[in-house]
Image (cartoon, rainbow, N blue to C red; front, top):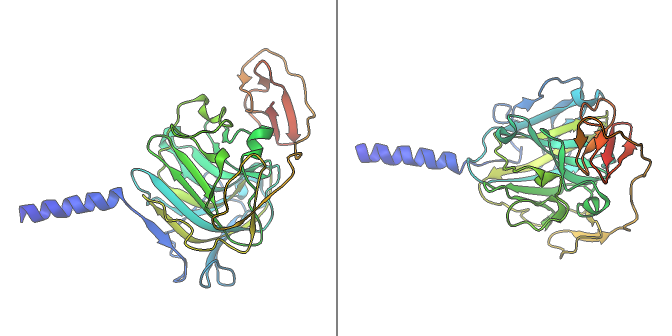
Length: 317
């Protein structure tokens, strides 16, 4: 009996260490398993079961971001994440294309940041990670960094995957293709991670939540389906979608499950800049240095200039 009890206890501990949760929402939206999440405030965002749009079957979860900037955010998700390496796979469909604004479609509370979020979303029209504690992005939002990431196609479901390792590794795939600019860790070869690696960082997330968060009132609708979170990679499980993935020119890889097309490399943001004084705290190159409501430093490190992108974001370039 003692041995049996010990085996049961060991099995329970083992199941926690390799915890996995997956859902295609064909049995509806279980709000106990997938509760909503709106840190700080929620003014207008909504989450619902959609029985008319789906990647597989008939159902998906539809998230509509509210019009009230940050407070229009809303997510649904889970705290059932593995204790070690974490792999996330989700099929998502974006209604409106990413633009220059900073937006998020997945947030993860992160003990490595004192509970602040590790975010996945977009900025400068491409996918990126954002570390809430210091606003670092992966990749850097330099012209080369932007070119090392990809757009998120609209109008059809896309297979998005990422891996967070216990050694600081970050791997990211769209429709089975690795995104070179969204890699980090000891085995990564990413020349566009200067902002991300300015501090030693190993994600230690306690939950994964999907939805929409914008920092300048950017309203959008996102559908999520066939979610899988576990300790090993699930993959896309077949053809990605009828959509195409646009890969920026600096990344060359074979097509695994989608059609790869390239775009000209001349899409560089406006270079309107302002001069800053050297007094006070400084921001590192490629860091944020201005924008409506920005509380951080407005002065750039030597060799870079605070360059205007839009009313809500300026960057040291």
